[in-house]
Length: 425
Ligand code: FA5
Ligand code: MG
Image (cartoon, rainbow, N blue to C red; front, top):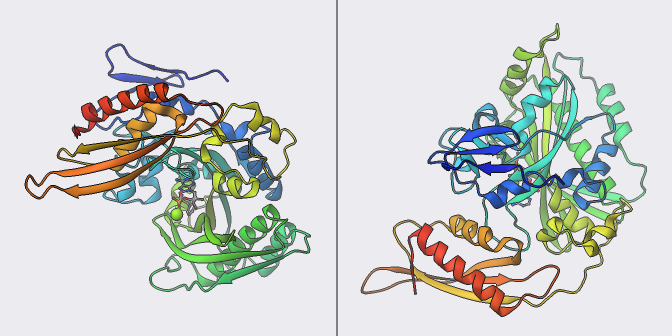
């Protein structure tokens, strides 16, 4: 690990990341702690659970080209515009993303590289990488997680995508496992989740069948120890696919969302075609499907990993368990006791919980386990709004002292007051 290669200019007006210089502006909200994560590349450590899941999926989709080295700094065009995400779409909010500046950001999903994947010339590819979103703090949320994008396209001209072609591919991917999979699919193709007007129905239907089968067989492979795996298909919406779905599995009595997917917006296929050097343009000749899986979600359930922070641990008691590269149940080591602190304050003009969590995260690092609002009221006379947050501090690998946490809490209090304009109580 080379460690972070991030240097902020003496003037504080630019940031150096991976050999590039980016100027800072009023959109810049990325923090040194977050930027340091861009050098970890957990998905490429051979005996890390995220990487083990990645390689199992890559082995399953054996004919797909793996593209695992795209850098997480992307343009807002790659992350949003190229994917038809409207300018006013809430997913662009500054409070939900890490911006380097107004036009550069840490990717919020691996879909930001769909066009690059297409331009690589492969008709089937997988893209894995770290993705960044500002979010709440608890055992299943962390500002960095990993996704795997899958993409495959076919000839659109009918009947070039034949039942035989689909069946041949499905045969390759069907695992030879006796265990059953139960799929629940009452999704419907209608005006709210339509086939795109540029897609002949004779081309779209087999592509949809192929997508659903590919994902069903993939989760069957991953969950091969679950005797009666229950999978549910749910209608969804993404600006860059139509029709779109999410796939859920029943795990310990709860439906857990694993991925989003759908038939790729034809504009993306065409945009890639315009730039392909090959003699045959893919413009309007090819139809594709894509999916985006969350790798932590899969790893947490397959390895029984109870806290998402563990993925970032350097503790040998964690890492050494995965040396064999196999999927197995993680042996948790004993939890150290938590140290709990509450803080109350009167709000200033604006309030955004993600900003609060960012401040806590930046000061406390991985020692913060959970942040929860426990009180919220408006004073009847002054009309001022008060909030109380409970912060649970706990280290994964050692005992923390009350004194140490008091010091952290003091810095958190000062920074929250300074940066968020609140009045501490
Ligand atoms: C997307 O990110 C789309 N790019 C997925 C996609 C790709 C759709 C290609 C169509 C075609 P979404 O935000 O729902 O969608 O995230 C996809 C998956 O990432 C989720 O199903 C979940 O498994 C995982 N994920 C999302 N947010 C988190 C989080 N905060 N922590 C851990 N995993 C998450
Ligand atoms: Mg989703």
